[in-house]
Image (tube, rainbow, N blue to C red; front, side, top):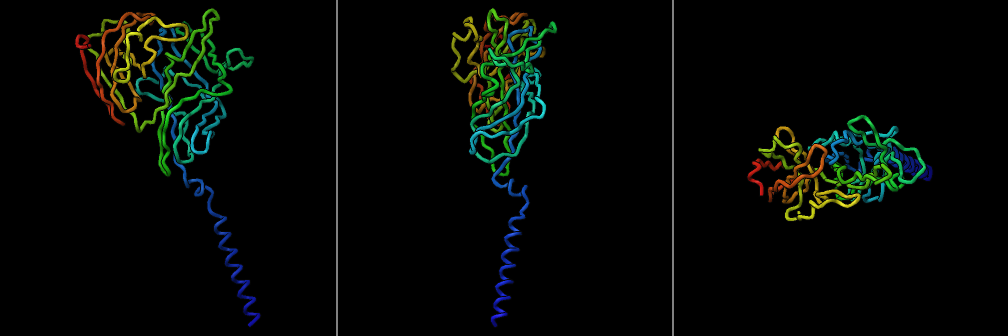
Length: 305
């Protein structure tokens, strides 16, 4: 009996050891899938005021996000990703990265840029402006290489689900001509939009075919004031509090994309060939935007308020 008991103990030990080994050999990808979801990060932009600018390139070396585990790396690119922001307007966007990350609530996304720090000594020239005459100007940013280019706003990555997020640049506000130094700075002017909670205004403004340039500026309902048209101080722009903007094209159409659900007012301004503000044409108020929906408006110039 003692021999049998000893064998029973050995057999039981082997069974326990085997069971433990089976747990330890669980596939790594299965474990990683628990408590995670997919995040897709897109980039888009709005038009610039300066009509001599043909392209605005930024060079991105990595993407980070701040969420339930603090700051995490989403992507570190082997080679910097160079993007002309002006190529992605009117609802067009560029897929920057798509990653599996921890599920939960995120509050910030940070782009690490290959860009010259203002006053620094590095030779980072991956980010620059290109003009219609073919010339280029290197872009500078204060502290850009150390802190990155942050976009603040909330989004949720659901467990075993996915979230699409758009970083909406406003290069019109971001570009700052640094006076006598003949230098351009790229200050933070970017919105973080959860695509599932956002919609679009698509419209047509008839009667503007004879004008050089008309821009539609979108504001939260009631947020516009007459001071928006004042001559800007150094480093600022007119219509500074507009959420976004869109140029009315040759078909007299415009698109204001990636707007959070809510009620908006659209203001139309006329500019000359050089992009200098001439006057305000009027506005169209109380446009309701729903999540993942399009609000279509069609108006005539003489109907503007």
